[in-house]
Image 1 (spheres, rainbow, N blue to C red):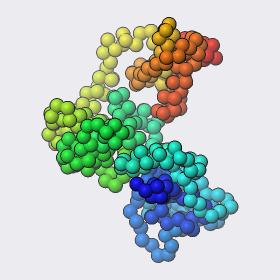
Image 2 (cartoon, rainbow, N blue to C red):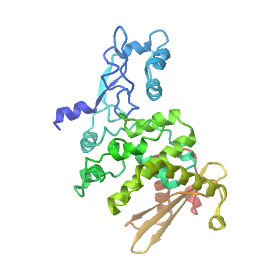
Image 3 (spheres, one colour):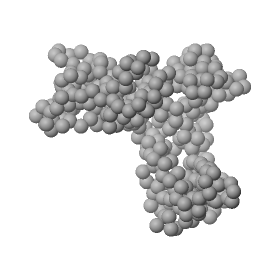
Image 4 (tube, helix red, strand yellow):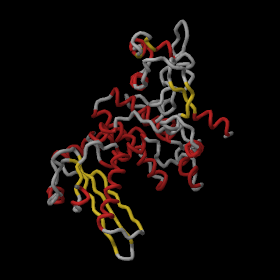
Length: 362
């Protein structure tokens, strides 16, 4: 990709008075991955500039037009854009950085992602808190987070990064992007044929999820995410073992599997209760994080973390290693830093942390 085209791709408009920005053609909505509105083009008499959507008296968005011409996701994201009391000119900025300032490293990141479905953005309108509260298995939570962030290791993604393996779909031999394996492949189209949910044909994964979370109940959204996880699981079974479930069987299996899981959660086994002995549930937050570190002579430092919900259900575990020989307090501080980084990535705003190093906690 030529440098000029790459820079052009990374630019977007910052809304001032809206007179220079075309509603349908230009990039101006930062909370959407493509930075363009996703609603079908509406035809009305007069200008199609963003200025038409701004009430000049109240200096706010004209909600009647947003309700009439834009889908729920676009409405939410447009209304996130602040309108200044004193009108200013619209300005082209570098849309890959929140500051709007051009940076070489983000240009490289944009170039590196050139074969993805869309530009992977730093802004995200996904309601992660709702995701973590869905009654679905922990492995589906983690998968859904990766899927919404467009980081599932598809054939094309692995090939672009490592130059190994095949970039093609195991079912149809076309290039396997994330959009392809979950929406566009003939195999997955047959899977979705019996589902009432919108397939988000022209949306990114993030936009598709956001649109569904605006419209679907928690139960429907949970079943949708389990279906995605099951589709990916079946894709892997076929990729490695050439075993494939008939397309029409997948969604009924998903429904039955999720039903069985929820029934087991309502009546936990004795062994599961015994596993939780000695662990105390959180008292001030929905999630509890246990963290510990170990200093091993001549082998460096190790630290680990386990995250559970209020019922003691396992959500996530992780470990880190360092060749540096930290002292015990430094090691605990590094472990807690690891926890805070995980919490930021998973957008866990409310959590309770437990460590045996009281000096650091205090």
